Image 1 (cartoon, rainbow, N blue to C red):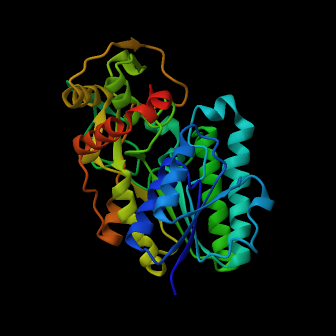
Image 2 (cartoon, rainbow, N blue to C red):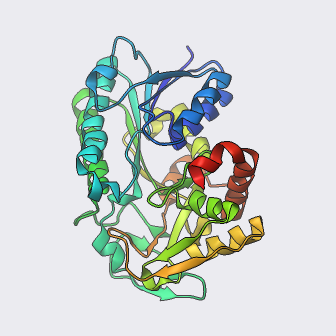
Length: 355
């Protein structure tokens, strides 16, 4: 029988990209997207759903009544619904707790009642801040890099693996996602609920409505495109802080494989990211944005670091690669070019959101 998939946070960047991508790969699948449309720009995806033949339901995972098991009879739940901002945990803790923790509880109850399997998108932010800020780094001409010798387990030249220690604070956002992982583990054991957890790094690409606290690579390209100013915040104000990035289409290929091979991966908790080959500093991102757009914009240094920030995070995705054979295909430059092409094509619609 055709698969029936419910995507929560389905009108967000990742949810909508996965919904449209899965529908294109599996036209016979029934794809339902549920979203509260809180994020600015998410309403732009509704017309895309109609074209793709995807059903949209306006609802909120914080409300148990919006997750009616008599209506949402599905085989698989793909949860992309979190409040993804670290800074939101400091300004709106109740919203983060209600969405990311109470929401997970409601989702698990739905999955239990309809006997659906759950694919949960967690985050690299489950790894605690203090050990990440004490990693030994080398300052190179355009970026910080990991030193050869480290005193923390779970760290190598490939980045942060699943063996990295979890003791310590990690931001309220990271704590809600780690707590959700623990709840999923308990539901899986108690109710024989198939589940996979992906700890995602920075996912980016077209249709991400980038802003200061989330979606930095789209924010950077949009600022160059619309000729707006930016800031290098913290860590000397030089822009040498580093993240790995993963194009959402690479994530789609992995999710598709996981859905088709769920039983083999059931119970897995996997780091998912672009790795060292897919990493950029902000300074290197600036250089690529200048090359692609032909524009140079003012970028001022701010020496005060943002709360909860770390100078470097690179995902070691060796485990998911070994288990699935999946590999990221999009280079950082191709990803940024893809974002530029999208902004160019939809400039009028995106200007109010991104400029």
